[in-house]
Amino acid sequence: MRDIDQSAEVSPREMRVQRSYGYVGPADLVGLVSSQGVGQAVGSLAQLLAWVSGRDVAELAEPFTFVIDLSGCLRLAPRRSEHVVCAGGERVLGAGEIGFERRAEAWAVAQVSNQSTGYCPDLQSWGAVAAAIDKIGLARPAGFTQAVVFRRCTECGELNVVREEFFVCVFCESDLPAEWNISAGD
Image (tube, rainbow, N blue to C red; front, side, top):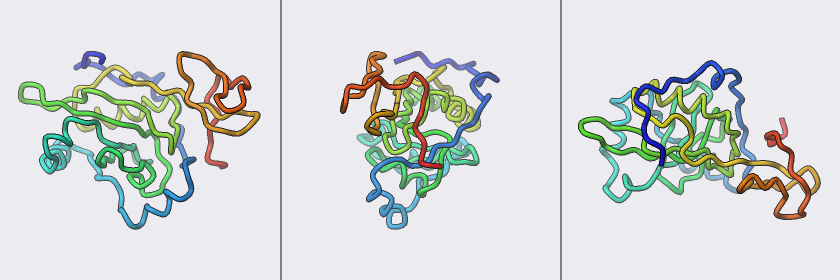
């Protein structure tokens, strides 16, 4: 895990393009959206503290599901919640898992990833994630503590997680593109 950088700021390079991501996961999970609600909007430290106070010790030991909605607000849900449910079925600026820890008298982001196979956000989504965390006023890492690289195979159309910079489709063994290429068909 990277150390928390108390002075990390979102650089203009990180914020240069705010791409939004549509849901690309299994269609049957979209049906859960109306029945399960949306993730808790957390736009301030007070809102985070109120939400965290409702979690038990075991739940706080794990990362939570998160999305950054189109307004730039962090939305949280318990781990193993579907990202599409947390987002209310809407497009997002970022998605993944986030973990918090209490340090001295303050809360901080201990870990954060872009691990969401429902949205497959590119690594450049970090700018939106960092800005949402900064808005709350939390210390945070300088980047994703676990960065996941997603690509769609141009031959068979399957979604892939690229591991160890091996850009080959696990389904058909075709080469995967170097650039992010996943969209929700829009």
